[in-house]
Length: 327
Image (cartoon, rainbow, N blue to C red; front, side, top):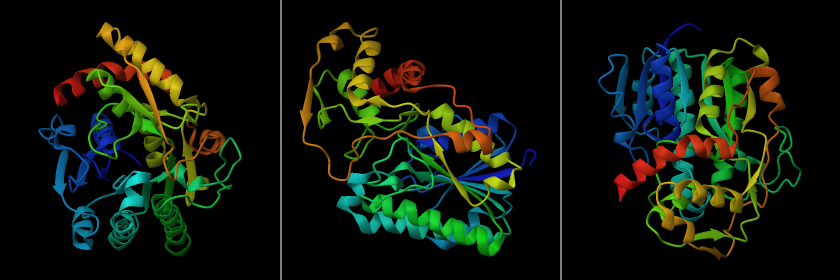
């Protein structure tokens, strides 16, 4: 595609801000759209002086904001969403408004602007209650939460826009992404930064269930890699498709927590003695998750570099410094 002008919706969020930084470093012009509901200005503060970067504060639930954001844009990386299964159970209406109506707003605004390439964040939650491992893109079950419903609905809309309008839509089903710029605060924060913050604060951390549930934790650099591949792909077999984004290996929650504790103990030896509490399993959670990444490897040439434990080793210094600042 060459070095073009791209829009990253949700660009002040965890994944979006990492994408903004990467594509700026690769010479792209980057426009970031975010309403700062869950995104953070500090995630992009190092980017704002770059003349190739533009920040627009706007809401994807507002079609006019979407239409303004896509003006003069060559391609879209749609990351904006309201994450969290528990949040969607507590407030399904807002989750649907952002994730479903907001997604359709971005699709339609892009279509009207004549934008072809539209890469969007999908979710492993789409697999629902399907028991088979590893997860294959064509084998999904019944959704277990409103969040999962919204993310699957996005895939259906994307397929319709591909079939009807010829847009080059590529969906990326993220599996438990973690890394720098991930916010540990709030009731719906992701597990890894919450665990790390609990250790830093010398408070007992809680694991839902027995800790033997497994996840295909995915380091952010792997996610950045596949977004770049999807943005630049000239393989027509990728269009109208969805791809698993993971490492292709699973770790138990207990393994991850023990690794975090060992790494943080290098900064603070007392962390070695902090105990773990086990609470009731969370409603809507799946027991085990493992991705097949063969489709992404074959069609997009995806080659993830870091498994969960390697990713933690790379990210722990950032987590330590940033979460200490939060305290």
